[in-house]
Length: 332
Image (tube, rainbow, N blue to C red):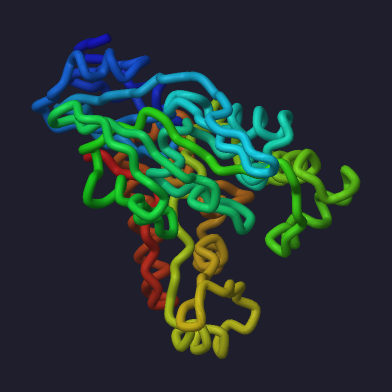
């Protein structure tokens, strides 16, 4: 379905009132191929939970709405679950947990759609989408050709993939395949969840899901009530030497292992130390419980939120000499 001068207010979780010159919603690969190629500048939009629109889109916005969750292959222990790009991510996680397919439970309650999961390589509590994705099906927007990418070809990184870099807005993901397990094994990645899991009983996928949803509900604002896109910044990765130097000055600074040569810092802690938690500038602000989350209190523009994010980045760079990278995609 092709529409013009289409409002994006209900399609982005910052609740920003901008329009797209052309908007295309496609519920099947055949429907998408029938309107290709698209010659305008193109933006592929999923659930809108990772976008900051700062102006009307003068090109084309395409939103895949392909639905359906199914078992693509089943073995004695391993199972491949396929989900359409338009499936709500948490609906997939809930379906897998309820059917006894394990591997995604730590990623419960993350906003957005399945099609965005490989683009962002979404992650939480020691797990990332790349740990389970075995194949991504996508269509080239230039010629309509279908291509399937295996895990290695997706070039996954920390909140990153080939679909955010070389192939950004060049391919539209239609289906994602996840390699999951019927058996469950405890892992030290659940250490940060242990206290919350204990409230529900033993460590198992059902209780992990409950714990994650509980924790996220306490820390993160509901975008239906308060406009936001979740974590606005990535946790910065620095060399072990830089991390050690910072620790000598700030011994309570959280540091996480990334590799022998690199460590990951807490962006939330850095922002908090710069005094930003709970700060409001007009209708743009920093959430009072989670400084990684920037919010729209109602009438902020995209530029208001972007300018606030730049002030935060500059203050962190000045105090810690650490560069914060945005996780949210900005559309100017």
